[in-house]
Image (cartoon, rainbow, N blue to C red; front, top):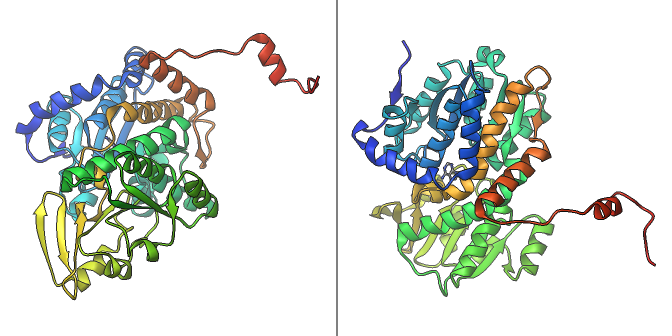
Length: 421
Ligand code: ADE
């Protein structure tokens, strides 16, 4: 007998339902897709397992997929990102089997992943690649049920590219992250705003005048940097990629090595997708009172285990804010246990950007069904036309009108014999 849910408290459902409703009205592109899905039922007959952050925005995606005819089951893609009220409402009000409890331990986290896989999905949706990893390692017999898996985030796509390169990928994948209407907006403006939101909710500090160190200058980190700068912080970027470092320098930031930044920074945020970007040695050199946060998908960017090992003591100061006393008496402050600060200490990206990310997710599910006989075990990006369609729908919803090419301009762009006159 399949278990139908594991959530914190069903009594939270009314609060969650209102949150879902509020986000829904900020997601007009997804709403248009939902209306079409309700009529066309493109996902009828398919079971879809989603391992995503269980937020009010995700709830709107899940109900869209269900409107499209899919049987939907969901679990959390991070132990700290679940909104318990949303999980309760998903189950109680929308009948979606949900396995997610904020603060669940690692064992429960993986139990929940296995519980959604017990539904024998045909399509999976990941944010970080944990479901697809489990399918390829411990539940390989189920791989033949899968017509496609979509991936939401840069970190997940990096893992999948490693699998593809080693010939280990055994299902077709759509890298939703790689659509322009996803990473240019969600990663940049979404992570930018929600990371600052998490830092402020956890600490209530003033950013103006602070030295704010951002590790990395990819789409997420540049979003964080520009928002920190907008608050009046002096922003330092650390990078390993010379082109990105150059961009950061020409965007007006100071660029230096982490070992130098640790001596002067007040706040540190890592969003590189790599591990041990902030090491114990870095932390030892930080100023008394330094604040450290992670905004990358996995909790590997800061060597939290290393800090735990050397600490003299630790105490919780506020929600998502822990004080570590280091040998010699220096204090540093870690936000959200070193997990994604924007989801652990705040509510993740605003609905307006998740609107486009999740429009792409819904279209990816439909893409798998439409193309199931053609797709190979490779990583695909959704066709450019779908990306443009999402952008057009978003502009339309925002009331923004844009120009179109005239016939003469189109001809000019496709010809090669008009030059200097
Ligand atoms: N990832 C980042 N922000 C998110 C949100 N609000 N909902 C789901 N996934 C997210």
